[in-house]
Each structure stands twice: as C-alpha cells, then as structure tokens.
Image (tube, rainbow, N blue to C red; front, side):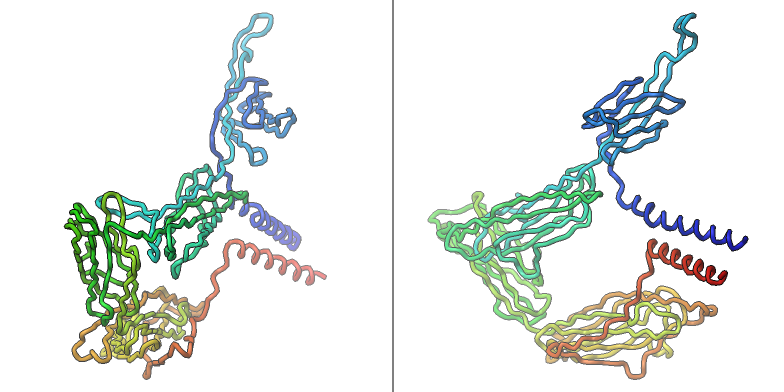
Amino acid sequence: MKFTYLMKFIYILMLISIIIYFGVVPAFADETEWVDPQEKTLRLKESFARGSFLIEASDFYDNSALITVYDANRNIIARNITRINESFDVDKKINITVINLKEVTGNISAGHGLNVVVDQWARILTRVPGSPLPKISIIPKSMVLNNKSITRRTFIPGSEISINFSIRNDGKAKLKNITLKINSSLPLLYGEKLNHEIYEIGAGNESDVITVRFQAPFTGGRKLYPVSAEVRGNDAFGKAFQTRDSINIEVNPQIGNIIDIRKYVSEKVYIGDVAVVSISIKNNLSQKIENVSLIDSLPAGLKPLDMNLSWNFALGPNELKTVSYKVVPQKPGTYYLQPGSSIIGYRDELYYNTKPAKLIVNGPYVILTKSAIPETAITGDNITIRLDARNIGDSTAIVKLNDSVPVRYSLPSDKYKAVLDTLVIRPGNSTVFSYTVNTTEPGDFSVPPAKATVLDQFLYQDERYTQRTGSNELVIKVRSKATSQLPQSTVATVSANPKRTEVSEATSTTAPEPTATKSSPGFQGYVVSVILIMMTIIIRNKNFKR
C-alpha cells in the first residue's frame, strides 16, 4: 500500500514538472502587449464593433455577464461568463475586460411587479495587441563650426566619412531579434562592419547610435554614392517587421577653391617625443577674408598638448597663413592624417585639406594581460597566476614588473610583499611570467592588476622614455569541498623558479588557455533532471517488485 501511494506521489510530481516545463515557462516567455484601451457601456443585448469583432453583453448574473464575440458575418467566435475585473482574449487579437456591472431595481406597477430589475448594464474595456513599427535614421556625423552644428554630405576624395545609424520603434510593442544590414559602394575603413544585431527595442524607444566609418574614394569629378540600410525584427509572436532607408553621399574633388589648405606633420619621431602638426591656409582672392574658422581633428593615438583644435582669424589678400601645434603619440606605429581632417568654414562653404600626411612613431610598447588558471578552483588546488607581456613596438623593451599578491593571500616570507621581476622583450615578442598560489579558504578573491614600467633598451640609463601600464583585474572563485572542515588560513607561495617564457610572434606559439568550467544548469535543466531521477526510481521499484 505504501508503495502504491509512493508511486502516485511520484507520478503527480512528474505531471507537475512536465506542466511547468512545457506550459508555465513558455506562457511567461512572450506575453502579449495589449494597447489602445477603449471603454463601452452595454445594456442587455446591446453590442458594439471593435475592428472586425462585434461584442455583445447578455444574461446578467450576480457580478457577472455573458460576453459573446462575433465575427463580421455574425458567426459566434467566443462566449465567456466574465466577472468584474476578469478578462479574456480571443485568438490573441482582442482582450475584453468587464470593469463594472450595474443592476437597477424599481417598481413598475402593482400588477406587473414591485422591486424588480428595471435596468442592467456592463462597462466593457477592450484592447488590441500592439505591433512594433521600426524606423531607421541615417545621418552623417555632425561637427560644430562657429557654434553651429553642421552635417556634412559632401566630402573630398580620401577623407573619412562617419555615418550614424539608429533604429527607433514607433510602434506599441517591443521589437526583438533585430538585425541592421548596411550597404554601400563606399570603401569601409579597417575594423568597421556592415552587419549589426540588437536584442530588443521597447515601444517608443530608440537604439544606441551605431557609427560606421567609410572613406571617400578618389574620383575625377563630382559623384554620388548611395548608403542604404535595412532593419529586420519580429514581435513577441515571431511576426516579422522590416524597414529600409537610404541617403546619398557626394564626393567632390573641389577644384579651384577660394581657400587652399595643406597639412604637414613631422615625418618620424620616437615614442615619448612630440610631433608638430602644421596647417597652411592660402587665400586665393585679391581681397581680405574675415571670420575664417578652422577646426582640425586627429586619428586615435595622437594626443594634442593643447586640446583646443579650433581657430578664428582673418586672411589678407593672397595671404598664406600657418597654424601649428604639438601632439604626443600614445604608442608606436604609423599614423595617417587623412584628407578632410582640417576644415575651414567661410560664408556657409566648407573647405578641406586634400592630401594625407604620414607620421611614423618608433619605440617599444608593451601590453600586459593577467589570467588565473583555473579561475574557479576547489580548496586545496593550486592556482597559477599568469602575466603575459607583449611588445607591439619596433624596439626592445625593458619591463620592470610589479604584481601585488591577491587580497587575503599571504606569502610565506615577510620579506616578500609583492612579486617583482625585470623582463627584456624584443620587438614583436611576448614573455610569460607565472607564479603559483594555493588556498584552503573558500570565497571570491579579488586579484588586483599587475603594474609595469617600460623603458627603452638603449635609453635605459637616462630613462628618456617611460611607459607605465597595467593589466586587467581578476576574480578567483574558490569553492570548498563537501567534506572540508572549518576554513584554515590562506597561504600563497611563489614557486622557487617562476616560469618565464619568451614567445615569438613569428612562430605563432599559443599559450595554454585557462581550464573551462561548466556553467550551472538553468531552470529547465533542473526540471529535466528531476524527471529523469523520478523515472529511474519508478523503473527500479517496478523491477524490485517483480
């Protein structure tokens, strides 16, 4: 008898689990967004139309009424006895709520009745499902000149064209699983992409601005280049919605300008030194020009000593004027000051530099990254702290490494407060430095960034160039064993010979990756596990009974 009750209990649990898994979870996954509420008062047998539906109230009961829904041909689609504040929907196309019911009694006559119902009515609220309505915006990135925001649609060959794309949902329901596809014959700058994905945009909301950079191609005359974009997405039920739009970008060589602009820069400097940018402006008219505004821009990695890169001045007849300023390169490499990066505004016309300028920066530059292997461990396991230093410059680097021990860890000797080392890294090579810690205390431990001072090999003595850099921060998760006792003290040890490995980029030697840990199962995973365990118990018990 006990076995029978146990089996019934297990069967009930399995049934509940299956209902939750296949019924409750999907029901909450995509809820309908009901919008456009409309209220209507209906007396007995009265009806009103909402869209293609005809709604009628009849058979008034105590705090409830019979609501009947017809289609356009008076065919009954649905019937529902609905109480006050209860609602129901018809095929996810309309939602109906009874918000109030009223019954009036009175005396008709002695022959026909006293204190009888003389009037009944129901207050009905109807709503329809909302739909998303995507709109796309394509606007070239604006700039400020003479305290005015100017949106350029004409560019000179070789200049950078930055275009902002954004998506707005003007509908009354969320738009999900959105893709943005951009199309243009304009050359795309390195690192840019034409396809983007957005998870969701709520009703009445707008996406973040997506900026895509193109380059104006070289052409002998004025030419238009279309830039188009298409947006696709769906609502909560998977119904597709899409829109598209386009603009034209003009590329014009600008021959015979009133004002000529030329841009120059130091040909080659060493990292840590300053470079000089010079802009030459020539007035081609035989008359004075007033209120000339010049703004300049730099590629990423060049930092001006004077952050204000705008000037206002006048030009005399046929005058040649030069504006200069200093920049500090942030890392070695080749920098191109593109055409169109220097802009002059005069009488609502824009003039640009038409030729690029190149700056070569030499020297070392080290990128430092920090990792733990593994990042999740069990008490008693060894954890390897690994530091990867990569020299992306073109000169040999002397790296003075300083790494603090993780919080709540301690080194075995008081004379060690940090992990210190000096590395020599050749151009294009990487060096790996690692040490081992061991812990018996569970918890999440913050591992602070490692720090490094980078010096040039030949400028080491006078420290003419110094780069100070840091790594990322880590969090180590230590879990206790099921049979562990009370937490003991935590001890970190540095191996007697810390491992140091130099890796050449040419050999493409890849350092070992941290051990992957499986993520914990989600809700549906637990439900499946429970079902499998119950089925196993049932099968074993049946076999035992036999």
